[in-house]
Image 1 (tube, rainbow, N blue to C red):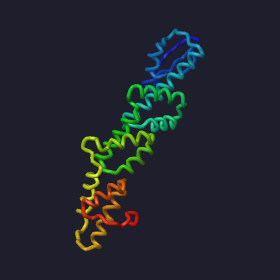
Image 2 (cartoon, rainbow, N blue to C red):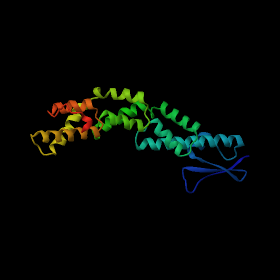
Image 3 (cartoon, rainbow, N blue to C red):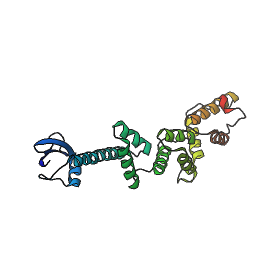
Image 4 (cartoon, one colour):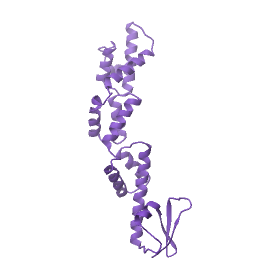
Length: 222
């Protein structure tokens, strides 16, 4: 077969339709067309059409992944899941992920570090909650462990200090009192709030001690 016409599609100006021997044979992005260096008059065999179709699928998958990354950083599993939802095959997805990883655009370690920094800046929370969210985002457990161990050395990040600040804000919104019952309610309020934010009991206990709210009561009873 010989290419007899290449024309820009009316509804997709970034794509072209290729005709061989007067018949439509396939559609390509202009980027794929340029890489293939196709021109009117070139011979195009069935095997070449198959290869071009595969190249176009790869291009579409890569473009889809880049659009997702442009909106926000994503873990490798997130990208894989979204590309599968778009019905790309496993081989194409593997090739796209490999290329993006080589380019430094997919890196679960950096993704997890960025997520932790942003999470701690926008809404202070504890290690337990951070761990759960990273797991849901598809980050591997060993990598999560490694990143969370870095919390104490991240500039400006001190988990206990953040928890103490949150506790003080909570107490500032409540009525003060000195009776044992008032103290118990304050202690319960702080403990419940920090637990919801995902702070471990070791951190909560140190905060309670700092606020003179510590008790021998079992925190799980609160």
